[in-house]
Image 1 (spheres, rainbow, N blue to C red):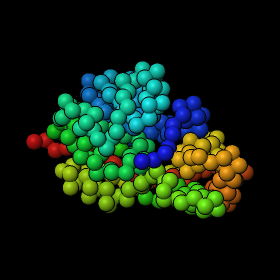
Image 2 (image 1 turned 180 degrees about the vertical axis):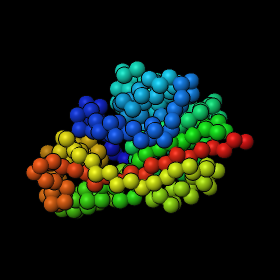
Image 3 (image 1 turned 45 degrees about the horizontal axis):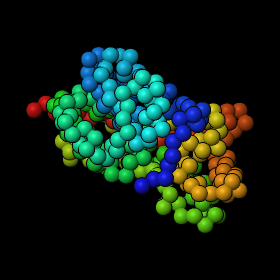
Image 4 (image 1 turned 180 degrees about the horizontal axis):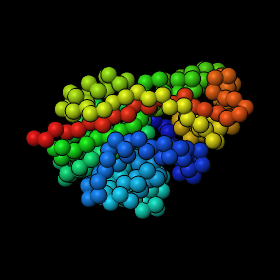
Length: 256
């Protein structure tokens, strides 16, 4: 299990772009007033609130108790739950959701097929599953920098890597094997400006890599990642840009 920790205040400061750039998944879902929607990986609930404003009855889950607390404070019905064990989280809700949405969360989950199976069981016939997550090749340059920085500190990258970025074809096949009809799926290059810099991004999204580090080790890590990434991801005019790649899809559970 990942050692990743989430701090709502740091997330709001350095990762507000996650919800701001989440509009495409809402557009894919086309939520309608009165629908019952599950939001998987709600974070602080910023994007979830747009579903509530439309008039949906929304239940949101996240693995982080801290983020769930922040979402609840924002007025979201949020619960701490493991997306890889949706049947356990919602034992009485089989076939009772009209739609499921997930933004920027699936690539944090190791058993993605378990998530797909769980979503299938919770959706009613005709229900929709709209998702955007990191796709194959996401933050490749940043990950290369992290590997080098950790190697210099004698730390194994694989043992601390929390991400699993799915490939379009394989994920489409996974959805189809479960029974979904894939209406749309695409790999999207989405270079993303980092207003708080690469160090701010690392402090939010890569803290599992520096778990247990001394302040000196953490500073060395940040410096080495920045030095590796700077030639490709930084310029004096716009600052830092992350080499994001997204996997975006809409899948439907056929009517019986």
